[in-house]
Length: 216
Ligand code: B16
Ligand code: MG
Image (tube, rainbow, N blue to C red; front, side):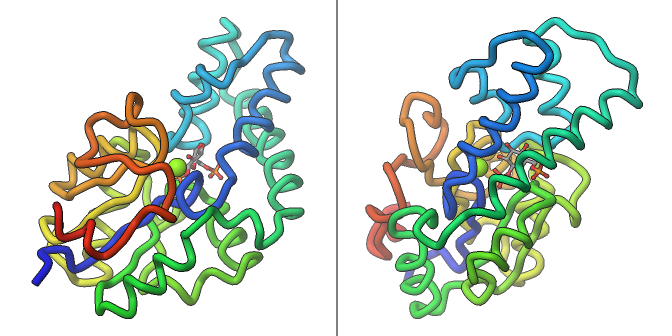
């Protein structure tokens, strides 16, 4: 029998194609503030909380603001982001995500969402994805962003499975580090060079099978 008893999924970039909307909204803010923000620089923001992401962006642009101004800038970015995600359609669920979630549940393995996004529930509701998860941990339930393991440890606790029997699916380097810090296995979704600390890397959940969980 497989040692994996729970699969914990990141949301942005693993289940839905929202990573691009975070990037578009941050780039729009950078543009407004008068500096360039590349896709390569955006890698540093993946899996990172909203306010920490803003700090990184402002460091890249070499800009200084008061705490009050920073809250306003983060709100502006979030409003743009919400504008983008409110138009999302079910075809923006990433390839293989729903199918793999179904297979996992049919095998008696628990599923949890582990995202630091405060917008997770909006996305899950809009795209009718809630029913695929035994537990949902989002940015409203945790205070520490990845690479801190808090989000994944809480997910494991909510589905009542020990961390050593969990595997995390992640598209961000900080997310893979969070899984390692939680004492869990990790499978990277995306670029093997960026996600080199994962147990293994696949292009999308379309390539994932129950048999591959047994390889961990
Ligand atoms: P929000 P994840 C993360 O979600 C994103 O990767 C990251 O880019 C974003 O800044 C963070 O959520 C906070 O999101 O502003 O919506 O609260 O990858 O953990 O699903
Ligand atoms: Mg992500």
